[in-house]
Length: 373
Image (cartoon, rainbow, N blue to C red; front, top):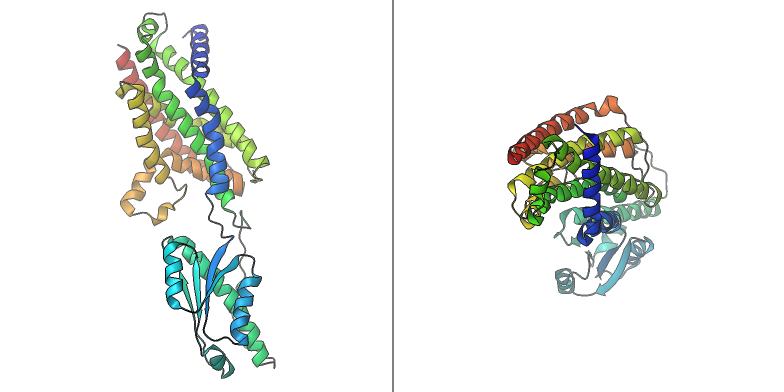
């Protein structure tokens, strides 16, 4: 194997890659857009809840409920109505997130020491968000309830109770950015290598230069190495850039070893580069290669645990996720970023990714060599 020939092929690949305006946009713009998108837009944190209030009691207690909601920075009472149908209409049009209905007998029940009912009507079109909004509302009302009990029964009542104290590790503030942004590192590496590697050989065929490469002294192994090295360098550079932005711009803690992250990325590249080479052997045009690439990217994304927990998926689908290299990479990268765990904890993920990568890359290279004959 001649490294001089490989070096010249790598140099040619870089020249062709950066000469193409579309490739430059993919390399520079796409990672930044995805990082900003998932860092700022894709967010499960509840910061603003629009509330419509229906107060049929008009008493001090009902005003205390309205004040308790208004005093919380998350809630904003955008509509005050006297008709239940107004709440239905506002929810239907998406102008509010919650409707709070206070019945006419609220004060009377409270003064008698009886249970008073408050109806919370939530928009359940996004079930996860609705559950969080209802939980926040219940917390506000529960706090007010304890204040009313102390007002009605000023004497000290001592009784046994369970004192539950919640402590959240690795992400104390439960910020969505800490969950999504580290995953962008893996997703950017997968997207760039899959997309660019899959069209690398097709571009040579469409330009009519593949025959020129075949008649050169380049051996098949040298051609494969020369074609993949540029994308390995680009992927590692993208990983470093995105990691720097995540740590210094989004303030995501990097508690673990950067060397372990680098090693994991190299193992991950075995699968993505191998799959890209495989796509290049079964495609005849660049458009077909790009369509095939996106056919793989969507299942990889959906079945990786990037957004949706794998344990919530059907059992059959959970078994399919073991064939997804992005699944293992996400466990490693979140463990390194947020938990600071080492190889002794993550070695199962490294081993699975290495085995999967070797199988995919070896199969792709074998098929690629057959196409060169």
